[in-house]
Image (cartoon, helix red, strand yellow):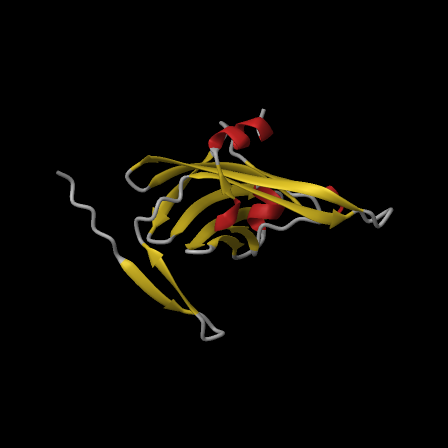
Length: 163
């Protein structure tokens, strides 16, 4: 018989609001966000689709890949050389760290997916992830990109997008 222990963490934010995170909540799955984004040239709003697929591997390791769409439909693809990137889970955060040699020296990428009961927010501390490692388009940033919990869907829907 397996005993499941839930650790609840109470977190206060700058605004005085708080949220509760279960340290072993199931975060695996496919998250899809559809939003209307203006096209810069015409001003028309077109539907943009962003997705993130998170798969638990073992222990605290996760496989993650996805694609974010931003202003003027610029894209940021989250993948590594062999497909998905490997992220480590620490409580309510998935972390990816890498260093890459660039023309002006070594660039460090620290990418975090910060989970709460409402979804997750992507953060990076120095923009090296979006500018050097994943080569995101000019009008898309990883920092502060949000996937609400309501965007979690079946892997089938995610597989249709990733073909």
